[in-house]
Amino acid sequence: MVKMESTEEQDRKLVLEFCHLLEKSKQLFNGLRDLPQYGHRQWQAYFGRTFDVYTKLWKFQQQHRMVLDSKYGLKRWQIGEIASKIGQLYYHYYLRTSETNYLNEAYQFYAAIRGRAYYSRAAKEDRPDLMVKKLRYYARFIVVCLLLKKMKLVRELVTELEKQIQEYTNTYEPEDHLEWSLVLEEIKGFIKAEAAVAVLHADSNPIILSHSGSGSRLSPLTTPPCERSPHMTLSLQEILIVGSACEQAKFSELTMDMFRMLQTLEREPTESATHPLSVSHGLHGHDASPAASRIPPYGVPGSKGYLENGRHYRDNPHKYLLYKPSISQLLVFLASGFKELPLGGALLLYMSADGCFSTTKHPEDYGYELGGLATSVKRDSVDGGLSCRGKSYKENHCLYPGDLYPFTRRPMFIIIDSDNSFVFQHIPRYFGQPLVILMSPQDVPPAFQTDVQHHGSLFTLFLHSPLTALCYICNVGDVPIHHWERCQTYVDRFITEASRLVTRCRIDEIEQGIGFIDSSYVQFFGDDFLRTLILRFVFCDVVLRLHRGFRGRHMRPRCEPQLPANELLEHPSLSHIVFQLASALDVRGHFSEGPECD
Image (cartoon, rainbow, N blue to C red):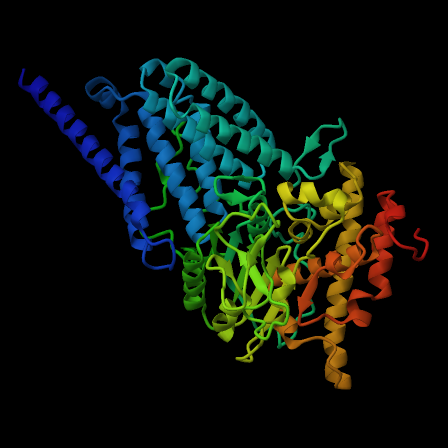
């Protein structure tokens, strides 16, 4: 009898310990939303404590599952909720650190929830709040799968989500059923817009490429070659990606342009068996849950990466993602990136936004009298843009070129994608620091205007996936995989040749004393990401200049400082490769007359 009481007492203590860990984990998780969204060090320790508690909670429920089942009444959806919170932790840690390996960790936990059907009995609990948790889980899982380019799974999840929304609506007739219907339509619209060009397998089914420069993240296979020089001193360290285009497809505060650019500025996640977050011996026990060792112990994850066997795992520059921010939010995050910039580091600002136009006929101040970019305000339905009327009045919710002047005290790389992009070409280099500005075309042919407005900018598509962009402007909707890979070799050849020409310009400048290329490009050229962007910009400029449909200077991109024409942008070797590529795609008629291609 004494022994029985002792066992019951032990069980009671186990239940109390579980309740304590569960409550503590909830408190810490809820506190995450109060952490500052900018800066590297302010939030790191708090995330560490949160990971620590979830490590203990996850191990505890695995080790004492039988007791918790019988004495606490632990339900499968409660285990799923813990796993979902861990998945969210990893996703938010990815957003904080820009490390794509954490996306894989989030995926593992979300996939386990689906694989073990933790939420399968949620509808039978007669709790609408539990059904909402299930729907939110699906929405979060879809975002992670989108970012990992698991498009086949995305489509499966969307079908399941649609059924779950229908069941939720029929069972509870909730007030938020319309909101969930809009979420579903938003996801479907985003997926449709993302598939600009379909690459087909031999059986004619679309496939998703994660290599060969198909718009994937940077990898050793897709990193442009470079002949290094001592002048290539800078590395990209801080990034601000801003999406404020009003009518563009979006999901979960990611516009299509933001979605494409953030992948362009990341490396492919590694799949290392020795990774500190890897699964130990597969999935755990009878429940096939993710192993507790997947949760990083306290102090292992850090804002600047972590060490394993002396190796530093931080591969990606740190970035902030801002969806339709207020001008004050935008400037605060920009200032934070500026403050965190280490010696030898460069700051990149990417903005996709509608134009804020000026009516000043004789501008004297190029910083504020030519207009700028709308941030968080809606497009004016009358004139198609935001007008800053009157010389003495400036639109509050508009980023002007002059707003960026203070940040040019440090090396800065600016990408502007807007119908008012060219106003940023006048930013002066007051402080003598490296500064490059890549500006999108301000107009596209009428045939593309509606699609570009909703499906994402053509300029950003060129920077993300050059071959996809070329196919798109030539009305090539699908390409067999073997043909795609052949065409990709032409793009790779173009990028290699353009890189050689940039280096050649620098050598000629040194040997002949002629400034063919601004030193800013040379200093940025040593960074893999910035070099990729510069060379893809060159590809975009050459292709649009040769394309019959893009006539007029407003339909071509611009850059400041200007890149040399004869020695680079109009070099015959680059035009020849574009003509070869066009012939390979059987779209040679879309391009101006040039040499016949083999």
